[in-house]
Image 1 (cartoon, rainbow, N blue to C red):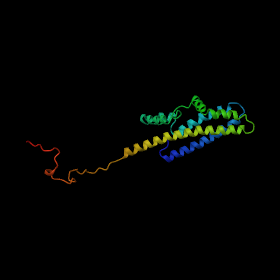
Image 2: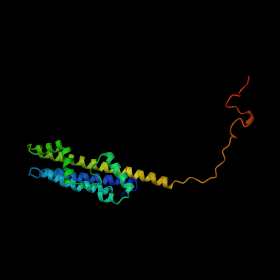
Image 3: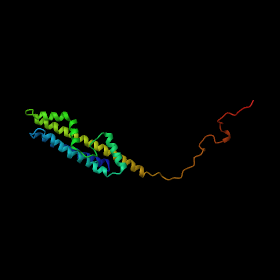
Image 4: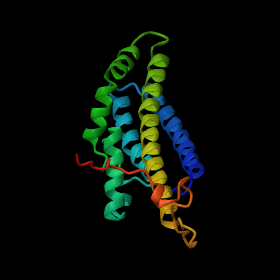
Amino acid sequence: MTARTIEELEQIRKECKSMVTKRAAASGGAVLVPVPGADVLADVGILMQLLPAINGKFGLSEKQLEGLDAETKSMVYGFITSIGSKLIGRLITREAIVQILKKMGIRIATKQVSKFVPLLGQGLAAAIGFTAMRTIGNRHVDQCYEVAKRLLEQRTAADIARNWTVPQQPLEPVGVDHLPNRDPEAAIPLLPASTKD
């Protein structure tokens, strides 16, 4: 993982969100190409570059995770599974991108149709494309941030535990001096005395 503090992690998150906004603007601009489907192909290409770049910034690319020790790698994949991501720590394929775009299907279909509406159609399509791309990108940034934050917190807790030292002081003997009745003869018997008749 590249971040060693929450502050560094926040900075990475901020940089990634800025990168997402720039790529989303490019996606919105792809709508202006008059070839049907060209904008969807552009979206696939943009996501094929954007998502691995985000993974890499957070130290969560497939290659980076391969370099971790077995215990840490297992912990990271557990975090990834718990948040439900299929894109962190894995090779990003066209099929994975197409699945994401299918989930955003209504927006994509609306974008395609709105391009053919006179006057405002292309502007609307560009806005839809920008919003869809930003949503996908920012969701991925937030998921990567969450995994990296959990790992950082886990490592911090482990470092604290490893470096924790208990002061070595001689122990004082614990006795019965603090009890109010110190006379053993005056002790209350636990069982009643047996009486023979």
